[in-house]
Length: 219
Image (cartoon, rainbow, N blue to C red; front, top):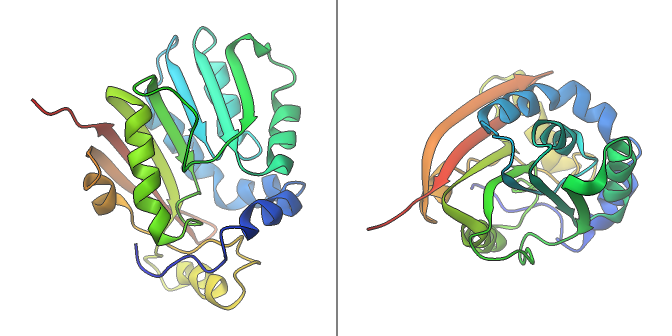
């Protein structure tokens, strides 16, 4: 995981409430490539039960709803401001197959082994280290046996230019949205997941890691 989160966890909802009106512009230039790749890697099948944790402004969730019109789609987030933006984005779609609600990754409020696919983008890079284990265990709890998980995070840059974001996050953590680079594959495998793939993508020098994993089943 590397260094711990630079901001207190209590600050995160308020920070993202303030960032919500501008977040999509940032995401377009730095995260859109990773999100597109992540949605491909979900291998989403219409009719599945899908949970997106930290749904943000609904950038990924909109694609999930379009790909899964006959399934059940739930998006949760701590930030009321982000959820409002997500609700505005999803307004043109029927609400019969999706729900947006306030929720916490530490306690998802979802039935055990009820989720086929769990998606999570740019959240673990905000979490303090002590909460990471709890959240991964909670993700494992709600996934069905062999359930799939796709996680995207800011990671450590592999080029000199991409390391500028890590420098900004150290010196001006609020300007970086409280994020710092993480590498989560090893930790994920220690919490009952089998890693299918790990990909590194860079956009406008911003480094992202995409992890595809399945809930391990043990005989």
